[in-house]
Each structure stands twice: as C-alpha cells, then as structure tokens.
Amino acid sequence: MTIRTGSDLDGEHLARVDISGVRAGDVRMLECQVTDCRMDEAKLTGIHVVDSTWVRIAASGLAAPHSSWRDSAIRDSRFGLLDLSSSTLLRLTITDAKIDFLNLRGSTIREVVLTRVKLGEMSLSDASGTSLTLTDCTLETVEFHNSRITMVDLSTSTLTRIEGLDSLRGVILSINQVLDMAPVMARHLGAKIAE
Image (cartoon, rainbow, N blue to C red):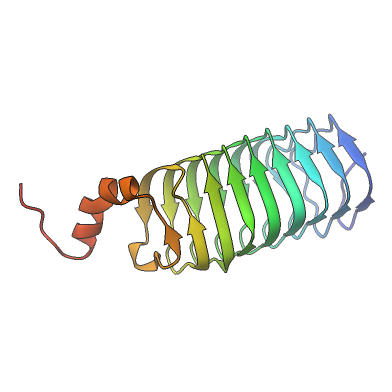
C-alpha cells in the first residue's frame, strides 16, 4: 500500500512498508495500525490520525507539521527528527521511544503523555494547551520560549537543560531538578553566586 496525498485510510493495517522520502499531504488515518515501517525523510504535512497506533516506526526524520493526532499512540519507535510543529495533539501517547529532536513549536497540546522516552531536544516554543506529562523520560534540552501550556510535568524525568526560563509558568519540577538548575536560574535573574 502506498500513501499518497489525500489518502483516506480506514481500519487499515500497514506492516513493513517503506515510505521513506514520500511527500503526501492531507492523509486521513482512522483506526489504523502501522507497524514495523520505515519513514526516513518522509513529509506528511497535515496528516489526520485518529484512534490509531504506530509501533516500531524507524525514521531518520519524519516531518508532519500542521497535523492532528487524537486518541492515538506511538510505541517502541526511533526518530532522528519528529516534527509535529503547528499541530493539534489530543490524548496522544508516546511510549518507549527514542527521539533526537521532538519539534512541538506552535502546537496545541491537550492530555499528551510521554513515557520512558529518551529525548535529545524538545521544543515547546510558542506551544499552548492544557497538559503535557513526561513520565520516567530522559531529556537533554527543553525549550519553553513563549510557551503557554497550563501544565507541563517534568518532575519524574531526568532533565539536563531548560531554555526559555521566562516561560516556566505551569511547569512542574522536582526539588532535585530545581536545585540542579538553581545556578542557571540565578544567573538568568541577574543574581551572582558566591563561591
């Protein structure tokens, strides 16, 4: 099966399909299973994913800006880049995955949960919404510039660096995370730390 612009997939099972390099817009996916597929440098602008599960997806880069995801899951997958910028994410779960760069810039995020995901960098710049929870994740860098998400829970995850300290309203951190980042926060506020 080939995914093309305007494809309407209802109840389909895509298994061991290579759509690397595909350029397809406005794909609709309802109650589908996508398993063991390669998507290197695929561009699926505006894809609509509803009640679907993606398992063991491998992609050096998957661009799906301006997409919508509802009541769907991504599991056991590996992405160099996962670009969901300017998208609408409602009850999306990502579990047991590795993502070098998760781009959520300008997205609307509601009840999104990442569990045991290893992240190099995640951008929430200009994102808005109600809740994003990272559970037992490893995150090197997260960007919050102009983020307006009511609640972002990072308290159970390992976090190395935060960018955009002016936009931390709604972010939940553990006391240990706050202590680890205290020097950076102090410098940001213009305080000097005595040796």
